[in-house]
Length: 331
Image (cartoon, rainbow, N blue to C red; front, side):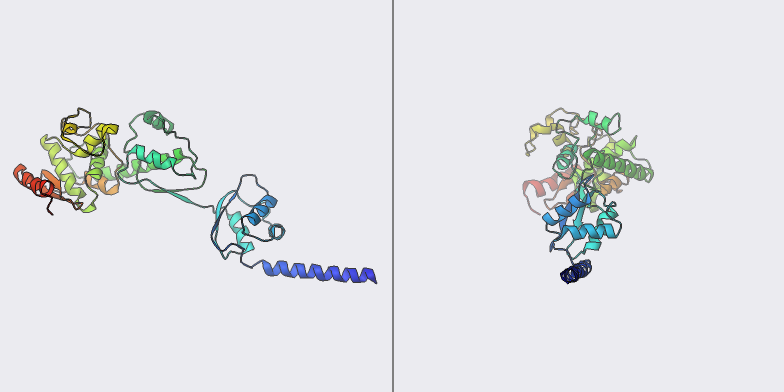
């Protein structure tokens, strides 16, 4: 009699447990906010379940384990970072882990950044594996990237790159370098005729100057037109950003007359033609402007103070514009 009663009680308990297990299968998980959870390489199902409980995602780790075995997913969970949204149920959680759809991080390389600024941004990204050090020599780094020669400046396309945790900074740089090479080749193939460039590198250098000279897409081609006409006529480019780049750490944020006399290879007041290398990473709009400059006869421009520029055909017109916008400071 006692044994029969015990078996009946056990059957009731088991039945209640099975009923609760089945009903809880589609019940939302415990987290009410998105949770980033990482399955380490080689981590087993039990450790994953216990870690999920500790992270506040599930209440009962054993039921998750049972569900995984029941659905044949116990050995199919893939390592990596996952974002677990609120409202997901246990079945959906296991499907997510088995899918390998790991969390994607974003890294933006900004138009107009120098290579130094790009490296600083990469070092500040905690989800990356850091192989590039602050002391990395640019030429050595280019060899690591599989590029035996060349200055790294301007060679990496500014864009947003997505990656998974543990991707190396070298991999991001390789992708950005390939993208720049692809974009530059495509734009070079569509260039206007009779430009004063010998190679695509010349266009890249010009595009980097345009990038630093104006942030307005609408006037990039016009700035390009001025600079191309100066090259054609043998005028010095006389652009401040190249001087600033050549000064390096000596520049304190205030460009002075004495700086325009500093004899660096990048001083386009002293040296005619293009500087020896890009001064920043140009975006697509600047590359297109450099290779398709606007027609016209202006040879000068001056900043208006509102982000745009006043363009002039003659030195006298330019001098008057400088007087108006820079010395007087009127709009």
